[in-house]
Length: 384
Image (cartoon, rainbow, N blue to C red; front, side, top):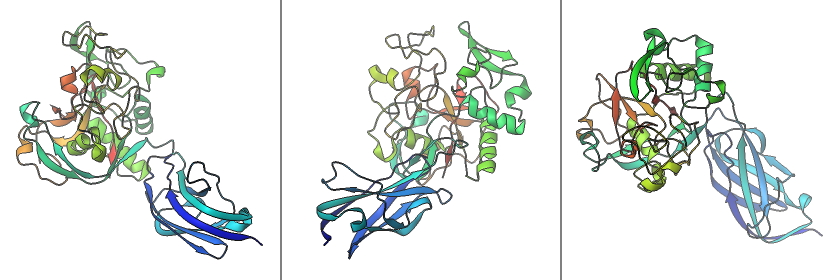
């Protein structure tokens, strides 16, 4: 006669393949005759579908077998988010006997939508925004709380921006103005005919470099890209507020209080960021380090920060949604600050390939007119 004699422990596990997935929570179980009933909540974007599977361990979690076969309920393909989901496992159809301590994992896997950029979930929280070690506009350090949001795992690439251009025939500010700023022969100059297809020196990029961040794009261009992506995907893509940007760059609720995104040691900064180093002819470069790239680097080339986000220090300055105000921190609201109500310039964050380390700090602020474009400015996305 088949028997069940169990001491159960339950683990939950979420395989995040598409970064829009979130978490499994509130897992529980009951035993009813020969059946084991596992319940769970799947917290995720309501538009996403998941493949839910159940795994078992019979050695206190050292190894896992599965997925289990004789299961019914909220399991299998095309499962959506919701609470009080349940999986019913007919245990003795799969094993002749079960005894001892048995563990379960509930796993959720979503398909990658290659039409969407990869995003990282950032759980909201409270942090100290600004720095007492930086410039006057970084002061005072003040308490800020932001809600949950998703942020681009990488900066928007040339290849991604090309899809937008091909779909809309959009004319960037560089196209309309006929030029952009480039750095060549140790000097800055406005170069005619340069747009998003060109590199930092003003040369047309080979397609092999389309995995670099897009540059020569203005704030207006970045917002137009967000609006197009919002319309085509139904997701509320936009630029980050500078509060969201600084919170994510600093590691969110996993923050270790680092000065740069992912690290607190300038001597090892070259492992995390593309900045002005000894490989360049910049007089302000850090001569003791070399990150192997003189200008922009492909996205994701360096180590990420605590949240798994790449290039938030260096590579390109990133547009934020806020109007810039050097005194804004003195009267910034605590909850989800949006920046000044008006202004002449928009905020940028993070430093770039031409910046010395001090200009790549998490708290650094920069500003340019919304029409400005040059060879060290790009952007990344968020949605709430």
